[in-house]
Length: 185
Image (tube, rainbow, N blue to C red; front, side, top):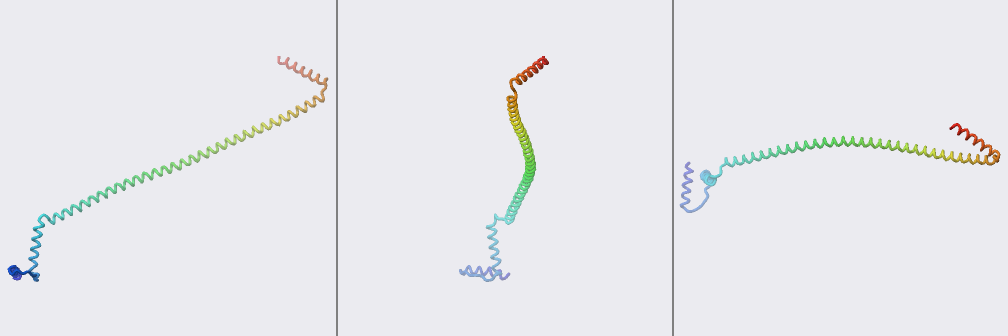
């Protein structure tokens, strides 16, 4: 304590002497420095309170936490919506795939049936064409045979018939015609 009073006294002496210097006694100058610093803090820091600063900081931290929680909830909701849309799209894709396969199978079956029907129709047309050509060829052959037979018969008749045999043939035909008319009447 004696040192403390001595330091105040020495401060008073120095001011009266008019010179300036450093006091190297740490124990004597420390309480003075602390007093000056505390006085300045109290004077300039009247409006600033440490508890207010801490409360403000706490409120900002809580607000940040609330905001991040809201953002997290929003992200979770969006994730759930996205998952629901994904499930829906996957189900639709599966449905399209199943429908597509069944459509493909149905079209394949229709094409096969259509091809078989077309082949059957071609077979029918082919057979009809063959029958027509056979009948035509058969008719041509018959016609030629008939023409040949007629030529041969006419040739035989003209060479073997004379007037007398010709008259007998005509009379026989007239007689047969007369019998026919009697039967019809």
